Image (cartoon, rainbow, N blue to C red):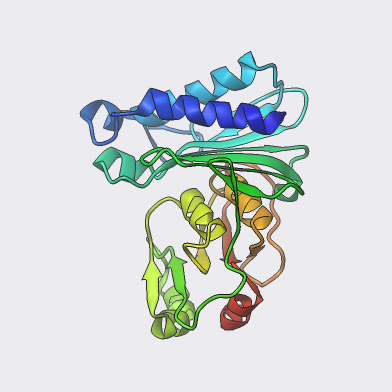
Length: 260
């Protein structure tokens, strides 16, 4: 099963990068990756590890990654951010992950398998379409009912003033807001009931950041919307940029309706 290969690749990245976070070796600049961001040594180690596992296991898919760009294959697509939360990893902040997804076609909605490993804690999240979401082998789910004082993740890094105004009513009413620095892992926190919603309206997120978290959150019972309130959809190109709102349940969708 493809999901088993993705899980194996995640575990291998965990082993290969253990102890690197916060070191000079991890933070060494290696030029710009295909996604446009500065590539660090830890990014390249993780991405090469994923590619090696994928090819050794006989998956001849087109690989799309933030560092490598696009490596052509013959069937399906592997979409990865081998280190999501690189800034955290470079600084030694223990919140970063490896995120890998498989899609049958060049659309986000065709993602069928996903795995994300918390590289600081070792927790492994994974899902296959129609089969539910799992954390370390046990079924996990988003909150079916959110409390009166929900916890909402909001990414506001480098956000434009107009977006701040759009978010202001939500921030003003929220009892608890959080931003940890790795979107894929924050989507997993939504999937396991630690967050009630996650919002990123910056227009900066790539499909490589969101593809695996998108499936895991949806298989856990959450919903993921675009900035206009429609179901999130996108191509899988490394140059594409997204905004999205993910909610654990219908009540949270209603509370955040002012955004749409």
